[in-house]
Length: 104
Image (cartoon, rainbow, N blue to C red; front, top):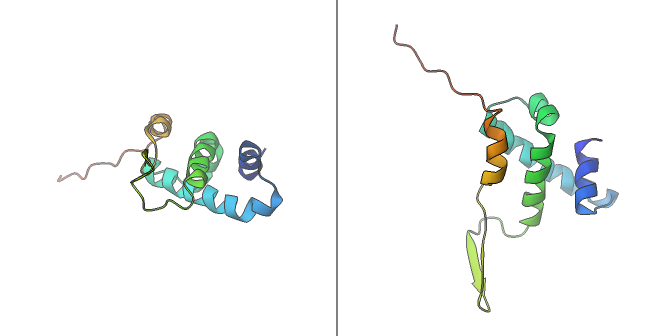
């Protein structure tokens, strides 16, 4: 199953939401690419589950972009930044390290 179909399944979404969901998939792919230094093809194939998990988080944060925390009626909410640690743990195994520059 492709990424958009899996995301729709997870969120209980329909075809009318596909453009919005695709936008969140694209955002998640870019974040994962930046973190792992991998190309898009690798991320889409090997890290599909992590992309979907991150897209769900981004979707659920819709409307709260830019907020770190808020409090109202005695209820406080704190928002995660960037990629949550749970997803990062999965991504570390796929992360490419920068090569050092030699002075030789």
